Length: 329
Image (cartoon, rainbow, N blue to C red):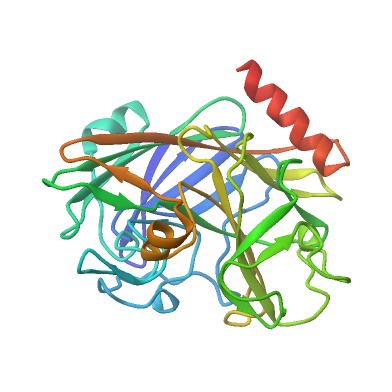
């Protein structure tokens, strides 16, 4: 079922079935402002404690001045930097611009939105559709419309609400992470520092979203993975949200944990991405983790989001079971 409503003057398009409802605002960077498990009632997208308020930003605005709600698209860089003499914006140039809605696809209950950046010469398309039980498909196409190679980073940036007993689950192969520049009040180190997962220091349990202190935050990246699955799951209720992708396209997850360190807020993000860290210039020059798109070529990738409830009590057991099911599909 597809419905169209308005909030704060902006059109909201919602896809829903008996399991899940996802809400999108094309004019606000194609933002995913809601992702509801309709069977359990859990809303996964985070909004400030005062509630969501929607307004149009100006390209170039700092991300902290955004609506700070839900999931945003970040590219061709996630952090502000300069690359090939072009100043790239904070969290990229996509979240602060209106995307064009393809009305012709709505009859098939597919929400297709597109954005063409003024510089560099990149055009992105995202198609959102519902799949099997509790599954949402996000299919992407990125085109280089220029005459030179374009290096880029892309990341989905879903800020998710935290409930007591939530646990962050990464693949078993993930035993370390590498810090991005944002480390607040937890003493883990500077950009590029290798940390142990899930316990970087005594008393800190990042899988439990617990720094062992108040008002802390951190952003880190997994090493390139062989299994492209990560999840947030509640140990008490079994509610979960999982993100899966083909590691031939996206082999990294960025993880953002905020327990009051940034803005006094509490939320967590699992960010499928093609590279690291957040700044494209550093990704190209130092970490060597990024993608290149040749002139007049198109790159495609997909992220699947799954929401549900299960009875498995161990995080790793859940992830293994989930991965086995995906392989069968």
